[in-house]
Structures are given as structure tokens and as C-alpha cells.
Amino acid sequence: MDFYATLGDPCAKRDVMDNLFQAGMTGLRVNLSHTSLVKCAPLLEKVYWPAARRAGRPDAHLILDLEGPELRVGELPRPISLREGEELLLGEGGVPVPQAILHAAKPGRQISIDDGALLLEVKRASRSVLLCRVERGGPLRSKKSLSLLGADVDTPTLTPSDLDNLSHAGRYGATHILQPFVRGREDIAVLRRTLDGLGLERVRIMAKIENHQGVSHLEEIIQEADLLCIARGDLGNSMPLWKLPGLQKDIARRCREAGKPFCLVTQLLWSMEQRPVPTRAEVCDIYNGVLDGAGSLMLTGETALGRWPAQAMGYLVKTAQEAVQDAQ
Image (cartoon, rainbow, N blue to C red; front, side, top):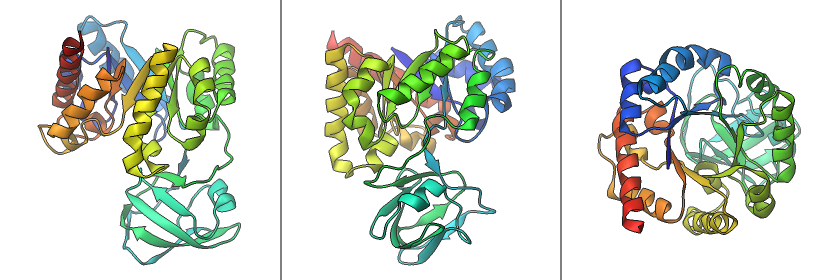
């Protein structure tokens, strides 16, 4: 199996990176929604790849997670505290959001922010502004994910920043591209043509399944992608949460039947962002994911933000290995 960490300040140190490899890490994800590959280059060249060599893992993976058609809140001068029941303006004169959201939103639609941590309901809409009511409050920060629930929003497969990052992918040793919000075969075809044009034919495409369009076109995505990634964050935003476990198992089953490897990601050990020991529910979740056929597991905030990145990787690897052993 493969075990991936996500790059962030807590694990961007030589000793921590060494400890991650010692715990069983086999690859690193770089989230390019918030940064660029060039900006991450010093950490890759001076911390990650030297640690991989010291660990005897020159074949370690480097996964670039693109921005893609994901929608995000724009830059804010400071975080905004949202309270339930108050009004919030999106667009001109208010919180900056992509034009695609302004064009697609209608009164009555709900807008999920930061993987569902915040929830708004659109009350009035125009082409330049949305007046919303806060249904679920909390701190609103720059660059957080944005989703218009139950609606398709027309956005390009690859953004200008994606194309720039891909142009540097070979130089820094990328082995996989994690393609977000894949909507169908054509999204993967666009990325593959781009990779081929850059001489990156061997780089593998991991298609993220994280919206209802991806689920609806799952069969063609399974055929076109090299691997699938069941991305439970935004996937969980697109449906009632109690329906997510059944959908995860259905996607896993269809991948197994097609012989397509898949990765499981999002909140595997979420509590370990703040605690040195996971919950019983989290280790059971990992164990069952492996029994369902996951060939790789990925930590996100646990290593990018958390206080115990190496310990989280240790629990991830040991739990998965126990599942593999018990399944034999």
C-alpha cells in the first residue's frame, strides 16, 4: 500500500520528514490550491527528496494536487466571524467570490464553504452580487473552498495556475497529478493531452471523485484515469452526510470490479490535528477502507496543519497493515 502525507509547515522540517518516512510514508501531496510549485521547490529540493534518499526511498511519490475547477473564496483582509441568522454579501462590495458562482446561484440555493463548515442560503441574486443568510456560522477565511449545492457551475478544467505548475512538474520530480472535481472523461483527456505535450507521459492521473457530476460519470472516469481518489470532503458537501458511507462503498466496489486502484482521503485521522491519539471511530474507518480495497491512504490537515504529523502517519500505517494482515 501507499501512504501519503500533505506538505505543510509542521512536516516541512528535516527531522519530521525523516520521521514520516520511518513511520511508513511512501509519498507526499502538495496542495497547489494555496501555493505554487515554484514556491514549494526549496522544501522539495532541500527537505523532501533528501529525506526520501536517506530513507532508501528514491522511488517515493510526489503528488501535485491541482486547483482545477474548484471554486474558492477570494482574498480577505482578515477573517470574518459569521453568526447564524445574519446577512452576508457575496460579490461586488462584499466577500469576493468567483463570477461563476454569481452567474449560477439562484434564491433558495445553499452555498457551502470550507468543506461544509459554513453554510449560506441565497436570498437575493443578481449578476454582480448575492445577498445570503448565514445558516451555519464560524470564521470565514481567504481561499476556502466554495460549493453551490445541487447545481453545476461552468468552470475550465485547468486554470492558468494549473498550466504554470504543470510546466514545472517534471523538473521537481512529480509522479502523480491529483485532478480535482473531475466531471467526466473529457476533463481527464484535457489533462492527459497537456501532460503529453510537456513530455510527462509517465506521470499518473489520480481522478478525484468529489461531486455529483463525477459520480454520475463514474464508469467513464474509471476507464480513463490511472487511479481514482474518493475525496470525502467535497463529496460529503454534495449530499446529506449520512449518504456518504454508502456512496464510498459503492465507488470502492465499482473500482474493485474494474481492477482500478483507488485512494481514500479526508478526515482519516482528523482529530489528530489537535490530539496525539486518534478516536476509535477513525481507526475503524481506516481499517474498513482498506478491507474495501483502498490501495492508498492520504492524510491532509493531519500533516499539513496538525501538531503530530509523524504520529498520525504511524497510526495510519499500522492500522492499514493490521487490516491487510487480517484479510489474508
